[in-house]
Amino acid sequence: MKQEVTITVFKKVFQKLFVAAALLLLTAGLPIRLMAQADSTQKEEAPAVEEESALISPALSFISVQKADNTIDLKAALNAKVKGSAIKLPLLKVTFLLVTDTAEKELGFVITDRVGKAVFNVKADALATDKEGKLHFKAVFAGNKAMEPVNEELTIKRARLEITPVKGDSLLTVQVKLIDVGTGTETPVPEIALGIFVKRTFFPLKIGEGTTDENGEVSVEIPQKLPGDAKGNITLLAKLDENELYGNMEAGVTQPWGTPVSDKFQELPRALWSAHPPLWMMITFIILMCTVWGHYLVIIIQLFRLRKEEPEPDSPNVEHLS
Image (cartoon, rainbow, N blue to C red; front, top):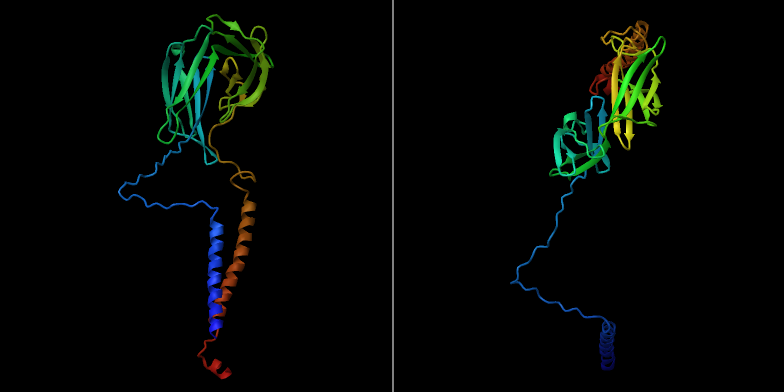
């Protein structure tokens, strides 16, 4: 018995020594990290976290339109992309400036409307061209707590677009002329494509186009029987769009060349396409609806009758049957 106990104790001691030796061999090649106690007397410094406010970066589109009365419309539009969606920016202040070689002259400001657009008209006496007859404009949005500032510039050369109506025996035309006035002398501008439009409620309707000749003129025929106002008046527009030198230009004239269209509100006759359908259709519809809903009403009445005729559990007949 003593020998067996001795052998068992020896085996347990040998196993413990073997395990300890294996652990020493495994940890011999690993780096040893020393754990030091933090100094409790030193104040902990809060990590510096830079909180950058996510400002909206708006986009500003800026164009000019030279009018026939020598004024210029400056048009700006503010929009932005927020979370992948394009939105308009209303009720924001856009300032317009005239840029010269020496300074920037503020012309005025406009608050954007509900679709983010602002239009500012510059009178002829406020315009000052440079030596080349060009005008430099600048539109500025100063930014706010939620949006970054943004500005855009454009340069155009001074010019004038003229439109003259010509009525023949059986032909209606308009004579359009493009004149460069940037240098102080009137110079015809050839080889420029111009479009002729008729004014409508939302967008002008294009009815013709042509290219100016060596005299800067082009003649375009106007279709007859165009819808006009109550007196038959139509407004014709000559337009130059997105020219690299002159930008956008526009001139208009009103002529009684259209077909009179009444502007009074009148009740339309009964028809399939009007708000008042024919009587036969109304009568047919009412009969069909009464028939359909009448079936529903009969079903509901029958359900209530079956509910009332259902025998009560404590009635004598029910006890007799059970």
